Image (cartoon, rainbow, N blue to C red; front, side):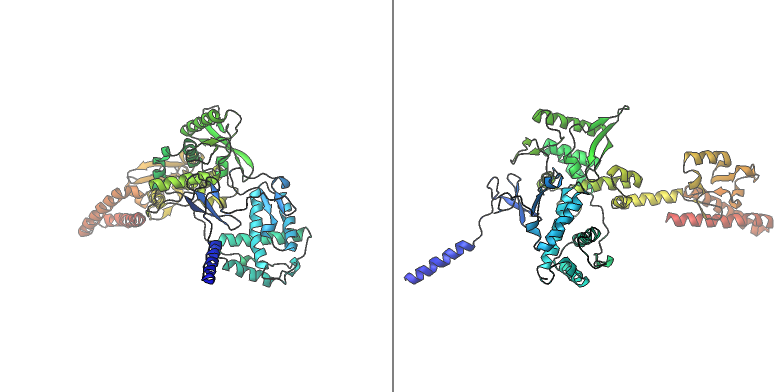
Length: 527
């Protein structure tokens, strides 16, 4: 009996050891949580539904001891994004397992730090190198960088495929390795074989489509904006109109609102990605929203806090604190609003709000409202037209209207051939003056006359002569008149042929033929 009892106790003890501990919020102790993605280290992250705090359960919260393998942003003379939760440290011990590789990656990071103002970009590089370091754990024969051959790279590409990474992530991992080889070779840290990585090694990326928010979703969001805390509501109104990046929004200065000598309102801010200051014109309504937020900040924090928007305490209500709001906290407010009021897209699926979607929405709207692409590029602060092209998504409705406009404005001559003359001579004020001076733009009941002035006055009697004239122009707006004229011409021809009036037959046959060509061309375009 004693032996059996001891066995039961031993099994019970073993069960107690392997049973997982309860996951609770590290701030408020609640077990009411949802999953919130993964940290760069690969650990599962959670969000507390009670206090909105993000946490990693059972995490060792001891501060990292500063060492040669743990660098801070301050060590590199850089600043972290105030709206980001990515931290301010680079931990080489946690990501890089080979000492020889760690030496070169440290040199690379120092070199890149001298060329960038973004600490997050260095964190991204270290994160991408992690995959190569993990891959090398199963390649013990690779004990120095000179041992990396083309065959090793091919095996690494295969390894990345097995990791089930997104195409863009694979591409960035390959690109980081190429950068390391190029920088190391250029600075004579090491020598590696040329062309270790080739152009065809990069995964083919799908064409980027704008992640804009559909108008029906925007409409639902705006219906419930008053439910959001006042600062969050105002943030939504700003990002909806201006399409700012989330870092630009969260770090707007308290004094960002400007007015010119004509009474127009502008918002002034820093393009952190390109590191320059700029201004955008805004509506009077948005200027009033910003003024209200300025009052809100001054009432809560006085004049010491320099930002337009602020963070909040971890509580069920929005209790403002004088720190920059995190991008994730802003997005979480919108996600909860979508869940609460069932804000859905056309398929009935609850919309998953992401901060960058507003930027894509503004760009797509501008394109579809006919704003020239170079203006959109400048408004959004893109360095190249290629970046703006991502937003150049033409909606079906816009495409239909443009096609209709094209058909309505398309001009044909007396032979039914498309001509570009009308578009060319009316394209600007200068061209319009030229047109007035050099062309007799005489309005006709069936089109207009484009006879050059240098040829003198038109000597063709009546409108019927236009149907054989190379200077006559018409478009689909005149189709009813043209069809009526063709019907009358056919009647005249029929009577003339029956009566043997050859002169009338000879005169009207070319008119009939030309009218049929013109009408056929215009009707084909109309279809």
